[in-house]
Length: 77
Image (cartoon, rainbow, N blue to C red; front, side, top):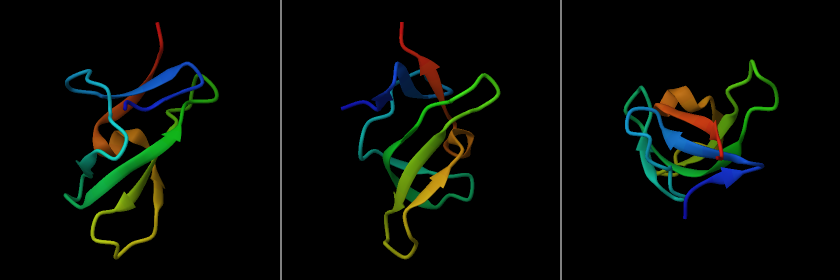
């Protein structure tokens, strides 16, 4: 199931493919994370956020800018 919220879809910036719920992704530091959801942009200058949990459970659940995982929010068409 892809991640959509409030008329926005979370996609991979490079491929344009939808980000799937519980998808394994790697951040810029190559750490593994599981995508749990996110918050789309609330104003034009915002990028929104992505919610993730650590794969190895050594870190708490976190919230990042989507660019950390080469993702972005796009409005649904």
